[in-house]
Image 1 (tube, helix red, strand yellow):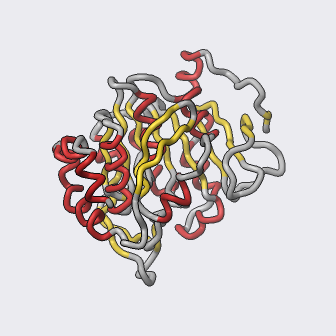
Image 2 (tube, rainbow, N blue to C red):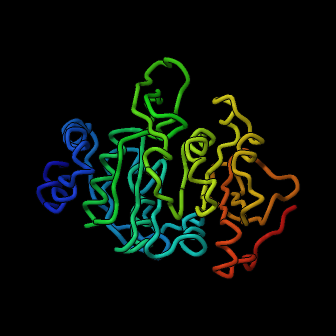
Image 3 (cartoon, rainbow, N blue to C red):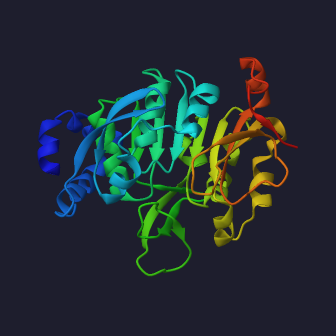
Length: 301
């Protein structure tokens, strides 16, 4: 089924053959050949946050997470679209999975913008690249790399969310990791989106030379309960972010496994820190855009 799909969508190959994507070709082909015969990959038409696009569902996780059978609403992406991203922006996405949110970001930056997406699992990155090609997207590059505080190698769990593990955990395997300050080589992204299952402190440590410029908007999914696995705390994370120079909002759900149902300006009382989003806009950039508060938001401390 997958090989037939690739013949039909011949536009996949020009995208794959671009210099920055060539390292994924062997992975791409291995994934295509090794997908379980029990699962028949397929393409769906998705509507999400005002955008419509085709999406390649390559495995059972993709089916569970993305084939929702209805119009998909993602409040965190709506916030990024309405308050953070602009046409022509350079956006970095850490933890792109199968490229679902990558497609949205690529639409919103327009042809003059650029999206650089990372996922630690080679199969995830290959599926994401398939979705980039499927939608004839030319402003996006996908890298099969983990992102952290150093350049080298680390281990991730053999799970679709590519969670970083400490030590040789059964089933885990090594992947290359890059430090964003080095990878970007002086380029200052306008927006950085991070969803790395508790490893966000290490990603931000590797971005300190960039963040000191106070030019970058941040959208960080914080997995509070997972931070301790990497010998860090929420206090460490907030100190590293140094939010005094930003206007920031917290996005929370009614339960830890739900999407955002409410936004708070600052930290509210009795806040559940188990899982939430931080959206931060540098104050000078917010003032330049005329952003001071959102209508209908809940005020915190």
